[in-house]
Each structure stands twice: as C-alpha cells, then as structure tokens.
Image 1 (cartoon, one colour):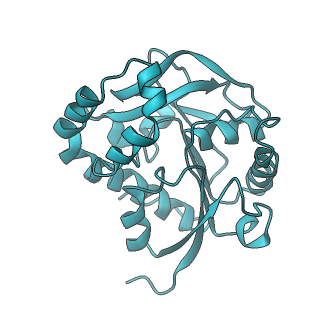
Image 2: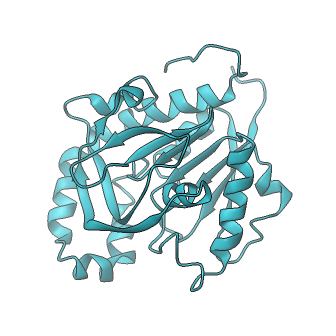
Length: 247
C-alpha cells in the first residue's frame, strides 16, 4: 500500500488534450495531479517549478512560435529549470518538442503530417526502457503531429519510425519525451475530432475512418499504456541508487 502521495502538475494547452489513460495510472501509483493552463497561468510559480512531477501535454502550436504565443518563453524556462536539475518531467507531443527546444535542439516542420495509428521501432535503449511493451507485434500508438526535432545532446533516442527519426527520447534519469500519444483514451478522442476539425480537414483525414481504426485497436490501448507508465512512474519514484523495478 502506498504510504504517502506525491504532487504532480500537468501543463495543458487545450482542454481536451489531457492525461487520458495516464490519469488512472497516476492515481493508483499515488500521485495527486493539479492542472495548469499554459496560456494563462504563471508557469514559473514555485508550485509548478518544483513539483514532484511535471507532465507537459500536447497542443496544436509549434514549440518555436514564441513570437505568436509569448507564454512559450515561460514554459521553456520552466522545462529548462527542471531538466537541468533532473526533476521528473514527461513531455507528450508538443511537450516533447518543448523539451527538445529547452535542451537546445532545433524544432521544425517535419516531412509529413502524421495523424493516425501506427507503430514505432524501438532502439536498443528503448527496448530496455519502460517503452518495451511497444516492441510487441500488435503495439500501436496514436500519431498526431507535423513538427519534429533534432535529438538533444546527451539524450538517448528510444524510438523512431519511417517518417521521423526521433519519436521518443530519455534525458538524464527522470525525463521522458514522447512525440506520440500513448496516453490517448479512445473514449475521449471524439473531443479531439471536434477540436482538431480544421486540421483534420486540411490534412484530408477522414474522421469516420480514424474512428473505425480507433475502435479496432481500443481494447489493447489501456493495458499497454498502463504497463509503460506504471514502470516509468515507479522508476522515477526510486532513489537514484536503487535498481529499476519493472511493472
């Protein structure tokens, strides 16, 4: 039984891109989560800067659009603060790109807009990491991005695919960046179809086809996300000199 609970802050860019399948895992593993809204909240408040865990969620803007969205400067400073101190940090999609930029890497428009379900190929480091379940034959993740980034100096590439060399990386002992959406809850994706309607139409993505593909894959998503996130949360909760515990 968990004896005490830890504080986590999730930085949200749009209301419907939230913790999804990660939420029940965090609750079970003893994390109390509060949300802050990236565009309007004080991202440099001590309660956010020094939370036991920071989760940076996705959003439909570019990590390089600081002139258009000035709050990104504060968000980058927040991430740089945490990564320089090896404070547990998880970045998803836009969050991973912001992590890369905070580490000094270039973030830029990728070769194709990737929207839909697909596989990733794990590196040897990825296979030995919490992402190991994604090496299974049936493992599929949700891609929903058009930007990419260069691998930050000192980071370990964990996953790639045919279009994007950097799909996931680890930095230090307790930072994980995922360009794909392992947390996406199939039940909540209906909100994404509405919220990203303009983007889907511009990319000529059929919502009925995407919905059908989601339905076919839905049953395996939560168990796999549970395995990945449980292991990672347990790893970051351990003292640095303790061996990793697999979920």
